[in-house]
Image (cartoon, rainbow, N blue to C red):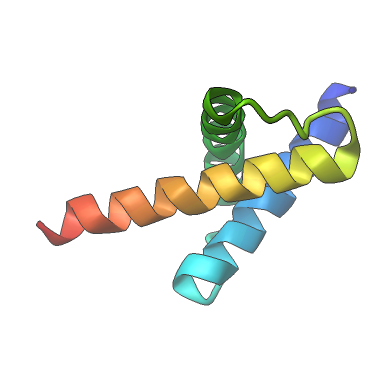
Length: 81
């Protein structure tokens, strides 16, 4: 997968996760950061469970979005304490 496609997928995953958790997007840079970290976190979490969805673009988007949602959820829980 090329770097441009990876950036597009990560921005989309961050945007989708922001809409799910906060009801709105986070802005381009934060969407990108959340998407990248979410992709890493999602890949790690699904790896622990024995799944791999990263062989297709849709699978990569799904993995990054789930990871980004988990990341935003954890950050929200930490910031409330």
